[in-house]
Image 1 (cartoon, rainbow, N blue to C red):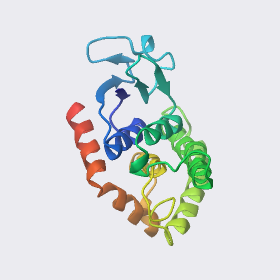
Image 2: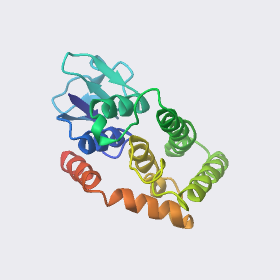
Image 3: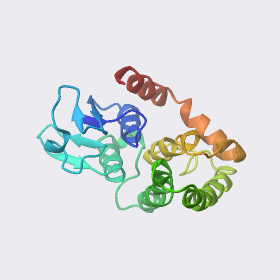
Image 4: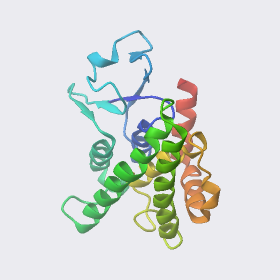
Length: 202
């Protein structure tokens, strides 16, 4: 498989899951500003959506959208426990978290990177996002990870997006339990490995 990624982008979640699952893959860096690969290939010719992550399967098919990719990768390595078995209540609970992270957290951060957005508009969006982060802080007061004591694909996704806080004027330190959770994920060997490889590819 090939993972099309950009350092620090939401593709980091898929990268982490690939390593946690022990799956073989090739990293292919995308310049998301120019929409080109290192060799000059037009990324739109590979993924018409133009953004990351995207995974090209061995048979040539392309899969996109982070939450879908995380479930696909987890299902390739069921023993990893990254996603619960399909059809179980646990699987629906993880889908619940993936949807929450995607719609409430990821999409809460995204507009804060928009240089054209007025400061007052960003303040409104930041306040809404901080409310959601506060809810997560309460959750982590009694849970090690999103699903309890087990690290899952949803944690790879949440870790990735809350790591954007320093770039968006949000101080995670105000939420003790959320900060401890982020550090707990950051300390995982495969997470460190993914970050090191992305840095080397930058």
